Length: 404
Image (cartoon, rainbow, N blue to C red; front, top):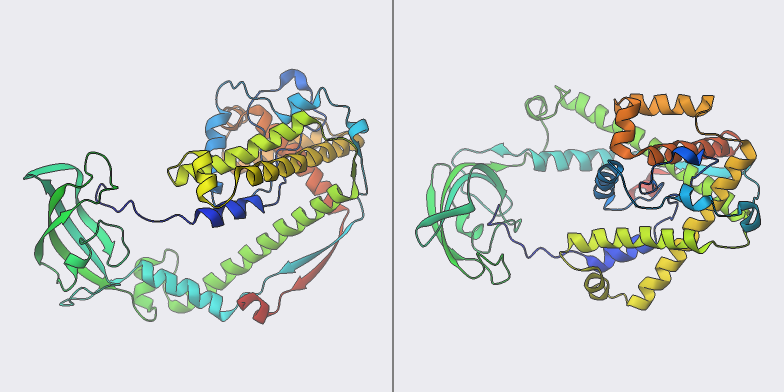
């Protein structure tokens, strides 16, 4: 909506430094492919978890469609002597530890409190206070004329959230359901060009004032939480889901740890510059996503984050070398195991992927790109091989540790 504040600060330095410290298990499976039928879409990135993950997944889907001029790992591998570049270390029989985080009562309660805040309950006759949610209809006018994006009906607004321009939320403090208020405000100078600094009048009608319950009730659960009708069922469901999530997190982490151990066991004699450059490009793409979130150009974002361009380039180089190392190790394992695109195991994995995504083979290739699909399957085969031959020691994290 046009009246929402654009002054919300992004923790740019924290985001950028987090990105720089991420694991760099990226785009590294051109495994023994028949390269005569390889699309040229951007290589699939594996095990890179960022706050921009949703955006990256969306971009992958968009870039997977149609023809692309971008070079993939598989294309680059055709001109690389893998045996010369890497000495493959132990990848079978490694030992790793899997720690599963315990679910505490506090974890369950925190999720319940979050849900209570998301689904407040109407209180008749209550005067709106900061922290309350008001359901409102509003009409904005500049010089007596309504403007695009300045009106809405049935909108929920958390007072004190800073979602709307200065003065809007404060102007509703003390209002009750059925009350209409006229707010004379001014758009901030750093707002959009067409509205910046302009005086605006909002006519706001409060439909309801809502506050979170202190504790859930069966009635609240049945009305707001799909699949549950009582508090007891809801608590049990939360715990079960959190335990499942913690198990998946542990599985993902132990797979990543095992893979990085295999990479560390190997010796990289040479980092092909083409692979390093590909990794640096992936790093840049991630940084550009963060810059995009803050409405800045890449260099401006990096400098405003307290990171020099020299530091950024150094980190990008290290990231690129990490990508190159993993690409070489993955290729070496595929060569050693004779993994081929189209073999029986590959076909089984492809069919499972089609089932998971609810797509036909052609639809899968069209959505994500043949090369992305092939590389993803081949790299997962490498992971599965490593884990099938690994000794995994499983431990349960203490509740006190989980709560810290």
